[in-house]
Picture 1 (cartoon, rainbow, N blue to C red):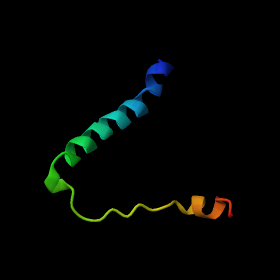
Picture 2: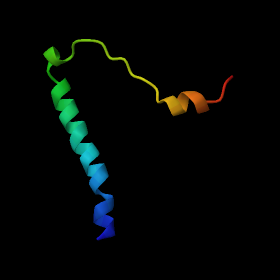
Picture 3: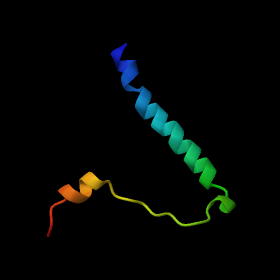
Picture 4: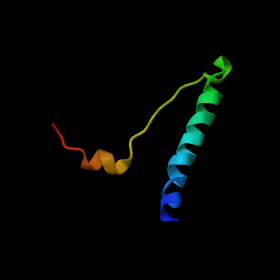
Length: 49
C-alpha cells in the first residue's frame, strides 16, 4: 500500500496541470500581468557572483 500513497501527489499535480492548461486555452483568460516571486530563503541562500 505504500507505493499507492506515493502516487497521490504526482497524480494530483498532473490533474492540476490539466486544469490549468484547460483554463489557459481560452484567449480571454490570458489577460493581466504575471509577477512571479522568489522565496525569501532562496534569496538569502543563493551564492553571490
